[in-house]
Length: 549
Image (cartoon, rainbow, N blue to C red):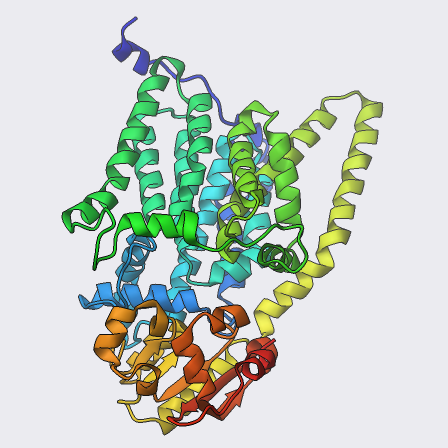
């Protein structure tokens, strides 16, 4: 039989078989006789579930959580793309650019009604990506054989997780990556098994990697899914198509650097080589999760503060999925990301967990579906015992996580974490001239630019990191160094680590030679505005840092 003929054979069904209740009703069906209502279609339930997820993510969006430094950086990059202007700091290949290119494509829409690009506007874009990801989680679950109820459960388990609400609202590259990774997995597991779908999966994966490089960790799982679900006679072609498509997309990044003569390290220019060495070698590690007081321990503790079920239960379910052929690809992804997270001494950012949470939810729902199916296939007596056991397990999980989830969701819907930020912005708007140089975290940049400050990165709002991180540009624009700065805005981002402060001489000197003029919040929510004074040191660095702890 030829390859062409093989492609036209009807594929062997791999997805779940539709239940009789989902079949269209005929005029003479029992549902019509007697005037009984028709059941809502599956699309209605999916739509309601997505609407619930969107509602929870949108409510109090501009109030919680507090704005984060990275959010401002990505919005500023997207703003530069939208305006066709230079970015406010030297691009050094720290991340591929597809994330802020996507974000820029949405920032222009609110300007049609007079709303300038800002972190709040970008957070609404995150909600859009969350909605798309939720739909794809459902589609992936169905492709893997989960029944509709469990597929909806996977979507809601992910979308309504307090940890997902916390991370998902923030303007993070990882959130922009999710629809591409989950979409790629949905394509490789599709029961249609079309070669072009595998090419599409490769394109999706390529875009994901160019959005956030950590998406490359999904590669083993995507290959495992493609190999397991592809039509056997054309499976090799599917793998080649996916690899070629992803390679062509990802290859645009080093090609761009090569054309700019910035692929390899050299004097007086940035390079991909230097960026990779920084990320993999030079960047300080976070310690280990089991070391109390380490950065990794703090990150894990922050994850579990919002949700214990998905990080812990998801990893356990992911390991079990490795033994279930239909769910193995999900198990590979969850296990891969868990192993990388547990490597000794590696760097662990707080947003790392974003990439694994959708698949953790699918793993939990998938194992629950398999367990209920196994119980239902037993004899009457074992079936009763099994159902009682499953009910007890469900009640235990609800008792374990329910109160915490309710408390954290209430926090998300009512907390005013951005109030100190808003107060500081209002004070600067009312009291400072527009030619004032203000060193602050990047979360203030777009807001101050919208209020009339310069967007060149040095004549108005200055990303505090650049005082030490971009010495060539600093010497060109601030010849007197920290003395050229007029005001400082200190928040949790700048005051997070005393050691980090002490390793930045320009910033730390500016803090020592400054005096407070206004402040809002306390401890982790503290925002303090300080005037830089050219004279003897006014402040001990430790005292300023301690107030924010």
